[in-house]
Length: 176
Image 1 (cartoon, rainbow, N blue to C red):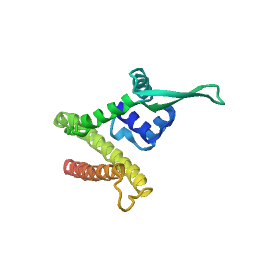
Image 2 (image 1 turned 120 degrees about the vertical axis):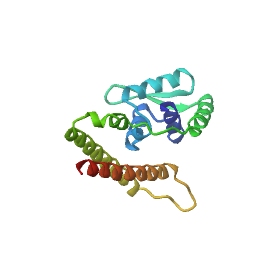
Image 3 (image 1 turned 45 degrees about the vertical axis):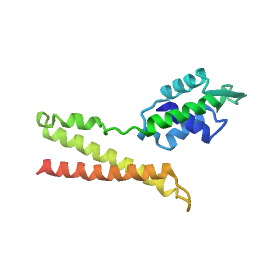
Image 4 (image 1 turned 45 degrees about the horizontal axis):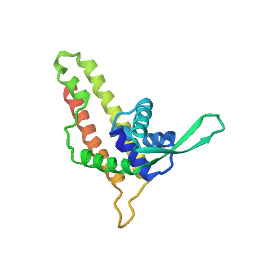
C-alpha cells in the first residue's frame, strides 16, 4: 500500500521531495493504515521511479550539501494510482491484531502479567484516541464537501473507543 500513499501524496503535492512526503505520512498518522519505516518508504520511492511511475523534476542543492530530489507523478504513475485505488478500495479484511493472537493463550499465562498486557493495550489505545482527537479538533469538513481523510479518522476513533471499552471490561472481568 506504500506505493498508493506515495502516488496519492504526489498528486496532492506535485514537486514534493521524499522527505516532505514521508513527513506528511508521519504527520497524518498513516502508520495506522499501513506499517512503514523510513527505509521501506525510500525503497518504494526508488521502485516507483524505476518503474517510471514518478519522475525526478529537478535537483536542488541544499544548504547541507545533500541532494534534494523533487518528484512528479507520470501518466503511467497516474494509471497505476487508478489501479491501486481499485485494488485497495475493493478489499475488506478482518482486523488482525497481534494482541488477539496472544490472548488465545491467556489461560496459559500468568494472570498478573496478562493484566499488565491488557493495561498496555488500554494505554496505547488511549494514546491513539488522543492523537486522532488532536487531528480532528484541528480540522473540519466544509459544507458541501466530503473530507474522506477526516471521516476515516472519525471512524478509526470510533473503533478505538469500542476497543478501549472492551479492554477495560476484559480487565475488570479478570480482576473479578
